[in-house]
Amino acid sequence: MQKETVILGIDPGTQVMGYALLRVKGTDIKVLEMDALKLTAHKDIYDRLGRIHAKVTELITQFKPQTFAIEAPFFGKNIQSMLKLGRAQGVAIAAAMQAELSVTEYSPKKIKQSITGNGNADKEQVWQMLQKILAITAKPNSYDATDALAVALCHHYQTSSVMFKQKGLKGWEDFIKKNPGRVK
Image (cartoon, rainbow, N blue to C red; front, side, top):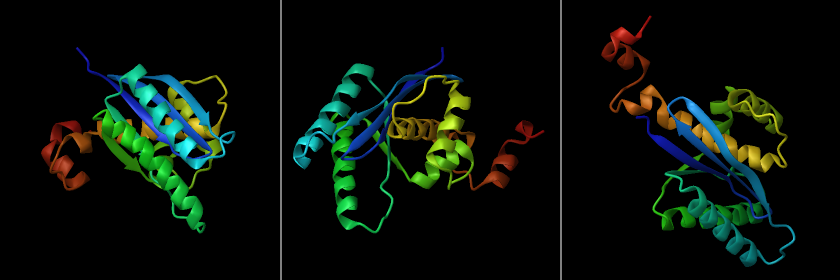
């Protein structure tokens, strides 16, 4: 029987936090939920952080994911924005750790490259690839939600690859040497 895994992907933010849940069973990948928590109506930063923690906790309780993946903050010029983003990320990670989930961070470039093959792809290109890969027809209500879906799918790709499963490999040459029957 194939193992089922649920992945919670988060695109952190103090104004909008994207979230998505993927269910993976063998080669079947299904989007369980994809949305964004809008926080702009709440002026107090601590109120926003509390709402982020509550939402992540609610998603964990409802969908019971086995893993948690989050986009790492990119380094910008505005220090205040970086601090706020780091707080949002920290609160989401704390909720996952409280639920004893494994936590993995991915850089924005790694996520884009994993989904589109181009680490410099824009949000629209990422969304179009997600539509094709996951056969999604509905329009997203936010690119923050699609970014979170990209985080979850990136995590699936990173943890299900042959290279990841075979520990101790030193690259493709080593893989080929250890798996001659898999090369055509």
